[in-house]
Image (tube, rainbow, N blue to C red; front, side, top):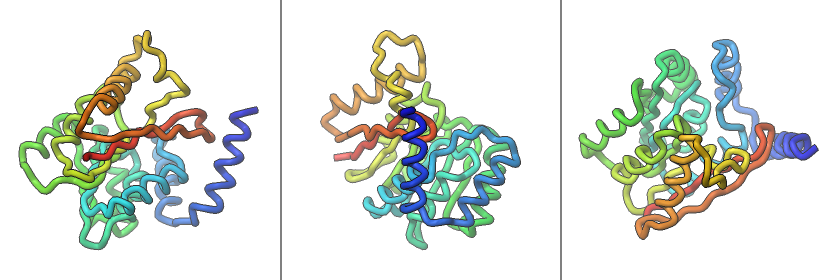
Length: 221
């Protein structure tokens, strides 16, 4: 019964707060046609990260985990015309689909799709010592969340925001005896955020069609 209520409420809220967008609709359709996993963020979550990026005034955005480019489009649409975004995808097929969807939306001029291991790509960005990123969205292999967090800190500036998706996992995150490597890595990130004097963080728990989960939002002091 709870899941049914959550799903109906999410649909209601999405209908009010997420106006129809042909680029996003096309991305969902293409993803289904390509038989990609149905694990992209929801429309409400897309609106959430889009709004957070706008509130930060993000001009440079970094995403880990492109899939079909659905979340990348939400984030790219938050950028000003001179803004730039890098999205990293390990699966070459997924990266091609994402790049096609971004191009179809007319945003290829501001979004670069990088193919490869995210840890390696992030290390490469760190080594180049380029302009810091204002906003990060991490929605990928959670086993590497600690590495992603550490690299994001190196690529950030005071005021930058880092968002991790899927940190609650139906409450599994509270299980300190878990042997699940993904959960343990997320727990370690939460510990680092909570004990660091460099950042402030909070978890927004979410419920909806995919059950009980949440996003970790971190701001660099």
